[in-house]
Image (cartoon, rainbow, N blue to C red):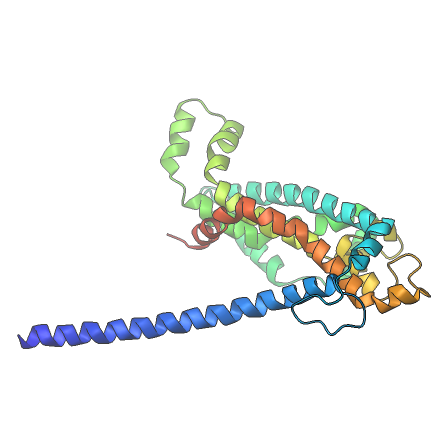
Length: 295
């Protein structure tokens, strides 16, 4: 009887502790979500507002002037198209290269496998720096070319590690059965391994796409004269500095709406990423956790 009473009290205490922890987690996550969402809502409200208003979360003096200014500038569409091209081509190339490297590293019988792993870890942690990279890219002729926006980010060892761990957890018996049935290396990779690795592939693809889309450092460092190759992120940076919108200098109305136009550019720049999330969202959690946990 005493044992049952003690156990009941213990369960009651654990229940209250679990309830308290659950309340804390919900409050913490609510605050965290609000800190992430409210600034973006403010930017949206600012983009639809007129000049001279104190903007919170609701637009004041609603107008589409800021969006009209952006859409009238051909430089915006040129930068948008360049970002789209770089993001799509770079993502396809990066995912392909990283997946092939991960598939090779997932094989325990790969010669010098430990050496390659150590090598990739070293180059992931240590870099030559901006100046040596610039000198090297100039020697091989990549400076002031659109290729420079793609190649430096093509190989990401962190993503290779995620894919490697994921592929190591796939049943080896499936590959053995396919080989017994006469499947070659390319057939095995394309029809067996890749369909099974869709969660981690889409997860890495989304992260890579966001990385390419948001990157402006490569254009800032390695496109000193070819401004026509600037991506959208660099276009926005130039506008913030007052040099991106045609005929901006001297236009009083545009000068008064500068903050609103900046907000409109930011809103338009995140739309492609927001659109891409629903198509791969269901794979992100599975791909991230399965690829990152070694069983």
